[in-house]
Length: 454
Image 1 (tube, rainbow, N blue to C red):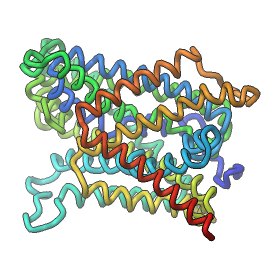
Image 2: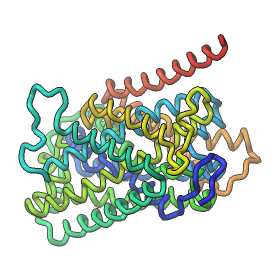
Image 3: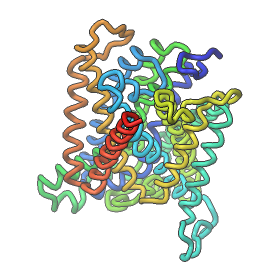
């Protein structure tokens, strides 16, 4: 393996880059958020529409990131694109948001979801800790998983990528088998696929609009990761060719799997059964396959969630690595191990922030908070495609966004509407996301003022 200009080893081929995208996207969200959508909308048709809209949004974003990543094949993804387009302030805020909402929060959500599903595989009451304990058994398990992944990916890049490839193949194969089994041997009801609940009947048009927007934020969270290969562009053997392919192939595969999984959920359980529930996969699989079959399905879901947390641990650390290389005061983040080739300082920092978030909120709160801020900065990165076409028209672009300018405009329009609906439907989490962005701006201002006074 040779070293890139970023100082990282080039070890990502198309297969591993595509696996990284798939593993990043398919995480806790698809196995936990459908119940929240059922509670907000009460209409299976709207829920399937959500996942189609989310898939279109993700594919448009992937096309835009494919152009940016092929033109600027460096570690860091949107951090690099915002730095080159808007300057260091936007890049600083991007790195701060990635550290909190962009990656640490989704990793925390995945680890908590893993622990929630794993509880069904363990002896009864094994995770029920005494009430006087300040931390629950689920949170202890989530913390253990988070730090096990930190250890794996700090030990060495090659082993970490091999681990991610293996669990991704397992998760995709397992999900395909679940979908096929559900509709061949599962004991479900096709009538569940086209149904409504009292929530939909009683809702006003405004309530449905807010519910759709709030739910689309959940779906956007579930699709987050479509840009994962961009973060490791500096470690790819042929980023100009393989980066666009990895983004588009990975996103397309996931969109099909998501529609299939939601069909499984509603084939196996009614809207009322799933409404407000976290373990939608477990509920549906018990109805479809019985208790023993449900345990096998739960095992696949746990591995799928673990793969997502692993992939995000890889991708997120590359942003802080790029940030550390730009900021001498945080140079420890921009260093790689001589033998491991891993940015250990960046991975450790992400593990610490992930641990704090695991202990700070419920799965739905974490997902909504992360989904809003991811949508916001994803939109800023997509906007870079349009601005750079005017600002730097002569920049080499090995890949150009299909359907430009409609593609980025469609992404920005849908993302903007989604964020407005989310502020109306989930103001607390949305405002917290905006506060995170503001905190990043304040930290940048203080850091620049400190440099000026020295």
